[in-house]
Image 1: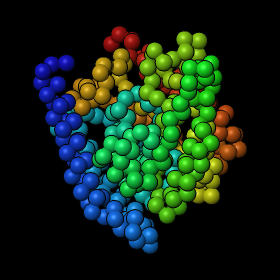
Image 2 (image 1 turned 180 degrees about the vertical axis):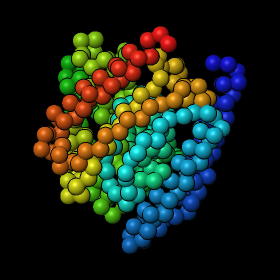
Image 3 (image 1 turned 30 degrees about the vertical axis):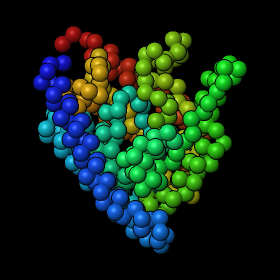
Image 4 (image 1 turned 135 degrees about the vertical axis):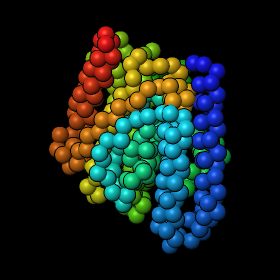
Length: 293
């Protein structure tokens, strides 16, 4: 990257941070109403959603018009008052900006499954509390437990599942898109099992996804499966290049499936099948990028 590109990325990061801080002011002013006047919580949720979309609009404008980043805006028929589940492969911090643009500009706001430790960060903590983001505890293991560590990491703890259910229960009154990166972490070649069938993805973790579907079953939600296809070879550092407008266009492929259809097939087989199909899509994109032009 050139000095100019580093400067552009730095300015973009500062602009995004300032945009976040500006929109935290109305959240901070209104937040006491949520805590002290329970009947006003639905009203607060609507105003908070307005703040969220305003912040996303400003981020989109800066990243697209100023920084020069680009991504597809696929036709996604979601109503702002509709609750849904969004799952996606996870490649970079850039994923968040692409997903919130695709889903939340005209559809429901995104809520994330967050690590509890992040709630101690002042600004992020306010956001997570204001929007009722579910906080998930990180599993801890001692040296004696290391042989079972991998198996445990793929199964969310009982308290986390209950916390997911509690968070989803509020979506009946405050519609949102519950986002889950079902791989559990960003894809890195070093994290991939060399013997695994998946080449461009990590194996999906079904527990949290199944818990979300179970909690939202009465709402008959739609599951939006998003494939984020970055240009190949993926430039590094990807997020920094994205902020500089140097990561290339991001293809966004979506498939919407009613949760009832998934229930008939089963959450585990459906998710594993979708991940095989998504891996094939990503491998095809990588192969096409390697062909001489």
